[in-house]
Length: 235
Image 1: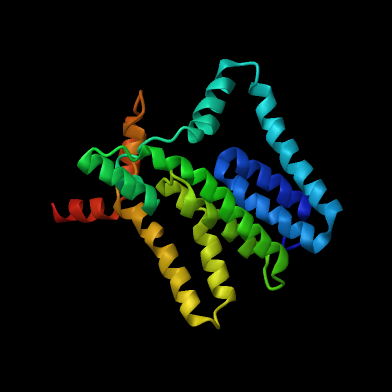
Image 2: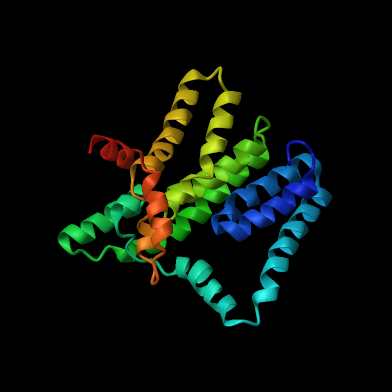
């Protein structure tokens, strides 16, 4: 939407994305920064106001209820209180997965190092913002991709579903930069790993960990596993 100059619709969809997955905040920040650079302060402020308005419009109706407080605590505030991301097969941040592994193996108290995640995230996001604002060859796709990667590289909690958003940006940027063959191969291979992971690992685990597991959802997600299909065929 931003690339086709439909900035208002782009801002509306950005607000909805923020309601769906909160880490969308980081690519949205860089998208708005790039919009500021390309179209000026007026367009950037309108887009920012639209994103905020959409977010508030879907949040305020629930604010008087206890569900709103639970939503804030479990979705936003819990991310400010790090914990060991077990099981490790569902943790996709190398640094903090390693620290968790050392804790599990040797009993070391490595949780104290998790707080540096926030410093790293803000620092890398700031560097990415300077890059987006100053580099003439950037575009909206690269701005969003840098925002997502800043989060994935530095944040202490990276679940597999967080990787889904960056796959299309990686592929589009790779196709646009096809002349840089080595860079394109790196992008495609990086996008391939989480794409295959979703089909080969048991993503139904999240439903099994719920207080009231949904057995139908668990069976459905287990059917989507390719290794499960091969196993069934073998039997």
